[in-house]
Amino acid sequence: MRNSNRKEQGMVIDCDSCVVRGLACGDCVVSVLLGAPPNVELDASEQRAIDALGRAGIVPRLRLTPIDKSA
Image (tube, rainbow, N blue to C red; front, side, top):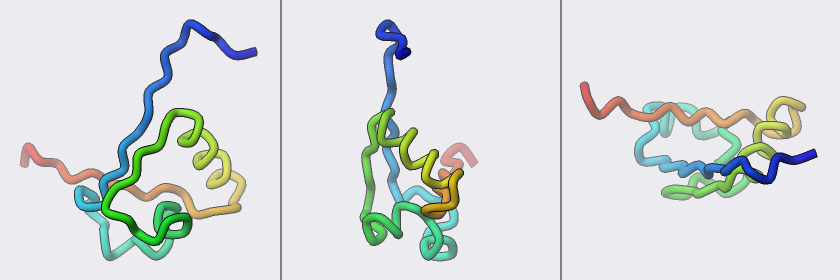
């Protein structure tokens, strides 16, 4: 049963801010599903679905590694 009081947050995937862009795009789920777009926005249910597919080995896991802009 789903908790209707829980606020779900989405996820913004910005390939331009990924540390491993270019190096790891070939086995990233974003590239598999969408062909390496500039950025992708996933809502919470889409994010859970991608995570479940990755854990099951159906698609590659999300390999987003954000750039540390404070460095």
